[in-house]
Amino acid sequence: MVFAVQQLPSDRTFHSAMILVHDPLSPPPGLAGAVVAIGNFDGVHRGHAAVIACAEQLARKLGKPAAVLTFEPHPVDFFAGPGTVFRLTPDAERNRCLARLGLDGTVVIHFDAAVASLSAEDFVTEILIRRLGISGAVVGYDFHFGKARSGSPAFLQEAGARHGFVVEVVPQVVADADGRPEAVHSQAARKALEEGDVARAAKLLGHPWFAVGEVIHGEKLGRTLGFPTANVRLDPSCRLRHGIYAVRLTIDGVSHGGVASFGRRPTVTDAGAPLLETFVFDFEGDLYGKTVEVTFVGWIRGEEKFPSLDALVAEMNRDKDKARAMLAGG
Image 1 (spheres, rainbow, N blue to C red):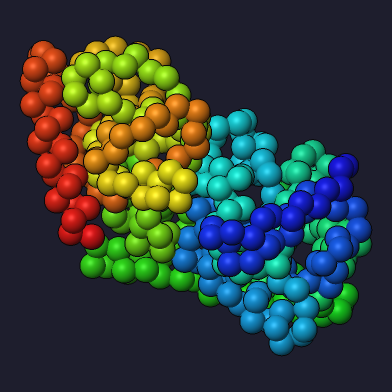
Image 2: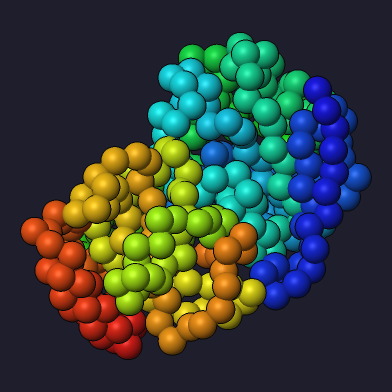
């Protein structure tokens, strides 16, 4: 296994520099004796934030660093194959979300056959004690670990009592989604996005869902139609509903309103991998090759096949007006 420590830069994106560690074989510098929040943290949603806040509070009480312990690839992808899980925040974006929470560090363990075969007790002794030297652990109420998911929060509490580290378990977090309470978990947010309900997903996540990618060259048809777009390929696991969305596109730290289409462009091609195409309002400049962040604000309509390009342009103008109204309202 490789031991690597990376210091993330301090800039406007992060509250402070965060240590990012991959596969440590011994307690990493700056994180020795840390209190760790353990989980996959895909989406870094409200439930995850509650676990992390508890870990930070316990770390302050013990006078220790606060860190997250997570895994890559996602365990479900390891067992069922790459792309099985609709990743709300691929690895790099997840680390940036975690850094915004003011943690001292993030530890990423490569999830492979060796890790998957560890019993719950071996996970505690090998990962938590020998390789990390933790002073405390915080998990959600439904957290399971070890071979065949045999380790439970209760088991972890008992192991902590035997091995001398503190364990706290965070109860279920509930959010108000569309006027009714809903348990917060990554699968609920994925389902909302698969339905195109980005507003509900934002309530569950605690922040609008976003995608990050490099602007690539497309067929440039949008330019000829009067709607030049910034085109981005999303993570192959993305199962966001195909359709039209009001969005905000951030480039070089500056946010611009826009309207985006995600799908296969049925009027024009209806083939190939889905593409995110964003028409940015009131913007002039070359975005090719730049990394942009597209934040989804509202759903406008589903993807449609129009009888002509004129009909498509007329609908795109209506989409643009609806997106401006949505963005102005929130």
